[in-house]
Length: 296
Length: 313
Image (cartoon, rainbow over all chains, first blue to last red; front, side, top):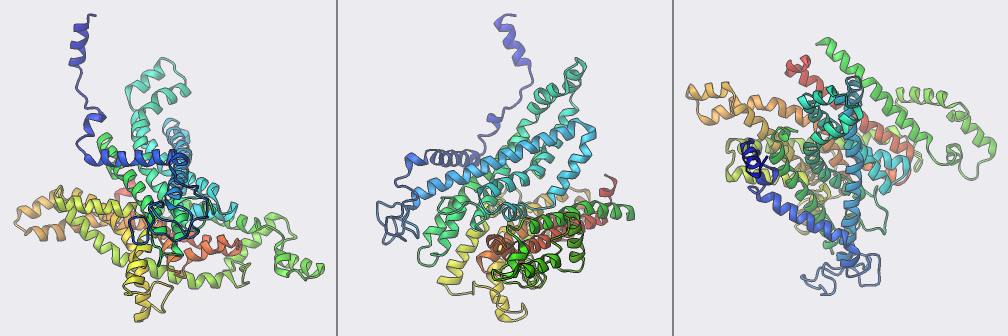
């Protein structure tokens, strides 16, 4: 086949607008995506970006941000109730909050994807798995958080376990409904007809074709996970002091709310921005990738 | 219909068993010897032994579980390890405070959410639609405690408009209502967004229906079409969805109660967990979990009654 023939053949294929082509119409994707990347980079390089040690308490406490009355230029966001530099703590706090979110989304999402695909692939497993999912769905993530904090004691481990478990049922449901559609495709039957094993069919045919919608759903879920983990640590059930974590920092700032509101407001605002950008990004990706998911 | 209801109730049983088993494990996992804790440091060994027998701690685990079940059936949830009060009586007053907060939030947030969602759907694609949807995304993304701290700082402290600590008395008194206002507003702010989103989706779906076209065709005024024909039909799924959001609301209530020292079940649970008061934590978590099961079941059954198509599937 000459180059010309190949080009003709390609041109004859039905034009399928790619994800990238469908995205640029929406400004929200780019802005929220850029903000998230910037935040992730700041968290990743926190040890190099932070002007001070986030645990060092030598500086004067309750200093407001540099732009406000009484602020000092060397503390851009001011200091907290123990005289720790707030910018440094914010960077490290974002790092731990994002780590908890990524861990819980990957662990819970992974388990959910596996359960959802098994439920779609093996008819005999479907009822049992979906029944289990229904049961898990009847309890909200906060309750899982309270329960695990009660059993193994408050701490980051309890939060990660609780949020992972809470993420499983939703992800399993979405994966299953996507996988059921894929199961009906001719290539699945073709794969089975040429004698491919169940394992190979699941990993190479089913999983790869489910990835798109599931990934979008995980993005949306990530925002929820961050929000609930922040709430749990705000309640004192997550990270232990003096460890820097956004929700816990907001809780500590609460004691100084009336005379140094920045200590509580800055970490709270950071959580808000992270979750907002994740939700905006997830919404746009969902609309661009798969309009059918719009009602979930 | 009857069969379906029985089926749903039977389905709830294993979950109920799981929840109770969890409560039992929580009690069992109390570090140290509960009998020694109750007897106090100066008790003689035979006193401790007597308490041990009294609590049934000398029995094998299945027997202890059976006794736990029978105590639950009698409404006995044990005693708090910190102040030795009855867990059941602590919970009784906390439940009413939480119910008060959640009901006030629903009364405030649901009508606003439905109104915003309807306006958004009717003016689909316009600037106002985009604005309302942007606000609702912000509402879903904001941490409850951020809203709470802002309201507390400005409305409560700086402008001195409303009290922000604890409960002010029965809800039918002025003081009681004033104390309820900020917590309900906080919880409500995060609930308007989801309600508006659900209403918008539901109204949009109904606006394309044949009966709406018929209503327009026979010359009804537009607001009459929307309120009497579209919204009425769109509300059925919205009401169900609101019920299903009970988990979301109760989660928010836990935080709201903690911020405003509102003496509800959520605050009780968090306090008990932080103080490692496991009997109290067990009681509070049991109450929270059971209320979810019951709410979910009611919503599920209502849905079946309202929409016969559900049964078929």
